[in-house]
Amino acid sequence: MAMRNVTVVGLQWGDEGKGKVVDALAGACRYVVRFCGGANAGHSVTIGAEKYAMHLIPCGVFNPGVMNVIGNGVVFDPAVAIGEIDGLIQRGVAVGPENLRISAAAHVVMPYHRRQDALAEAAAAGAKIGTTARGIGPCYADKAMRSTAIRVGELADEAALREKIARIVAIKNTIFAALYNEPPMDAVAVAEEYVAYGQRLAPMIGNTGAMLRRAIASGQRILFEGGQGAMLDVDHGTYPFVTSSSVSACGVPAGAGVPPGDVGQVVGVIKAYTSRVGAGPFPTEQDNDTGEYIRRRGKEYGTTTGRARRCGWFDAFAVGYTAALSGAEALVLSLLDVLSGLDELKICIGYRVGGRLLEEFDPTVLAKAEAVYETLPGWKEDLTGCRKLAELPSAARAYVRRIERLIGRPVGFISVGPERTANIIPNATIEGLR
Image (cartoon, rainbow, N blue to C red; front, side, top):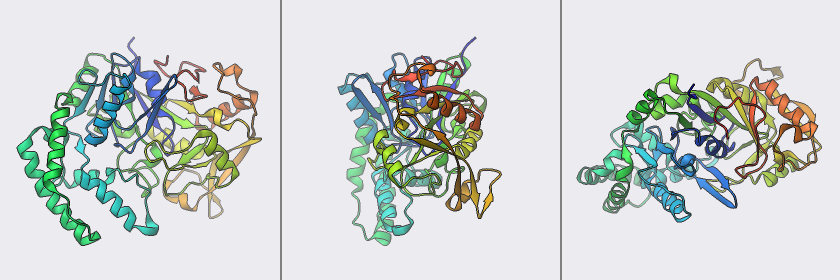
């Protein structure tokens, strides 16, 4: 019996370790598909002594025979993508039309999107969102506006592209001058740059939705690779401190062009603690020595921005919500090794708001929420050499079991280090793990 498709999504505020999981599953799949976000995502894969940081190219690229797809739901920055492709090729990783396709319907991040992102964030003063300044939000805004949007397929039509860029840049220059007193952008220079991108990428651009639907019809397995984490989902996260796309499993059908019934098995990736980058509520944050200990041991600095991440205790109340939202059937628990050395660990099991214990998770009240904790014993042992569940200290096993009970889903994969092989697979709940 053929294995189902699989969707890998983060269930926290991103940075959960999805890249390693996608790499581990990709060998059992024919396609790996990015369906949301853009170059604001940062997925890391470590192979031996080599660490690869991916922003747009799917993490299936390290597996021979896998077709990697950038879906229509992604906002595509060609400058970042080409830099990433060239960097991979220089390091001996094959990337080209034979293993990478880009949806003609994906929207293009332009220089004026990045400028607008940075200017708007600077002007927000005390009301900053915490954007990566990669132009993601402004590009999605133009996608909704339609008349000021450019899609990847348009990069191949030089005459039409030059005309459209001239028209849009004139609009953006007027806005930038009025709002920020900014000098105008050079439309001709922008057009030259993007015409060249179109020529370079043309062999990889196509109707990826049709390709994936044909793959489904013929029984080929697809892995859908999520970006960011469900707590940053534009509809279901901690709005307005969110990203600009649907990053839970709910976003797969629209972002990849496949039927909802073909999302397959949803695997939710969680850290053994919690982190987030940028502004926004964070009930379990530890802005103290404990948070610094976790940050230092976990090397908690953004793959995309380099910013220090805020760190805190594992929030089972939030993860229970996002696991239900995405329909997660199994969990991946990453970075368990980071918690070694702490005398005790806390897990958030609920929130109080105004002295009242909440019955259900509500992302709109997090700014007022007080975390309710239970305490478990910690452990001192180094976990990075463990490859079987029985090799973990009893306190670490108890911590894993408690997370399973609180979330109501089995942990099928535990990461105990950054290296590709530093894993424990306690059961066969995730189809296709090597």
